Image 1 (cartoon, rainbow, N blue to C red):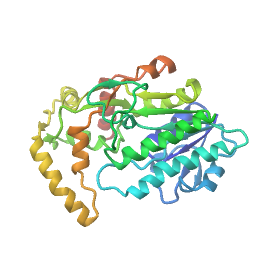
Image 2: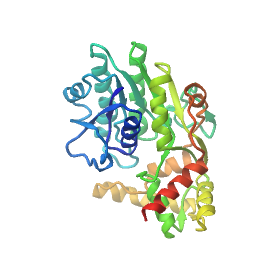
Image 3: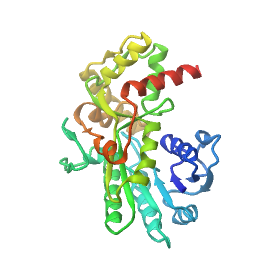
Length: 324
């Protein structure tokens, strides 16, 4: 296999590059010249420099490639640059799809989507057959990824061999999202946390990238595959970490206080062009929006065997401890 990975320098992309190399693949990565590529240290990646919406760079990177993994995305909530997010997530995906379709022999393509395309499931566990009920969008990220998925599904209907994967919460020792909270917890300084009842789907990043490889090898073109090992509440997650470390579970921060803080920080962020760590949009995701999914189809059709949530958290603890 000769594979192109967009977003190769990111959290998931860098793990995918190394997994593909372990599988014996030759890997090309599309990265910007300004990107931090430290995560790719030690890999044999062939780098092609260019923006995700630069069709000439994409065409160069796609030469002699038989498989494309499109992972590049602008992922954030809150006070974001919505124009830039649409350019990366929507127009970047359009550029990748149309460049692939224009090749003499179009490559197989995997698109990394998100469970967020299903919208608010109101606490109901859904699978790939679920039709989105939420008529509006909770964020610019929600909107741009949904519209990009429409482009992917249209390309599949036109004959492009593309499969889509929808990861839930992606965890790993170098996870830039929940990872810092686990590190703070291990230091003993995480005394409080909001939204303890929020259900979170979990997938270890190494299991995720293995599922991506399985999806291009065994998946049916045009199909969607939810990638989630299982789910649990944030409170239960901290309880597992507490049991393994002896560190007390962080106290629940009262919801009215959290909402008040968000209402204060949002206008400050707008004034100073700063995206606060706790704003109204993040609070909406924490308390008001609940997307719950089942990863049974990927396990059944792809032969995917992800580790349990407990094993995921134990692996993260072990690796973080070994680096301290």
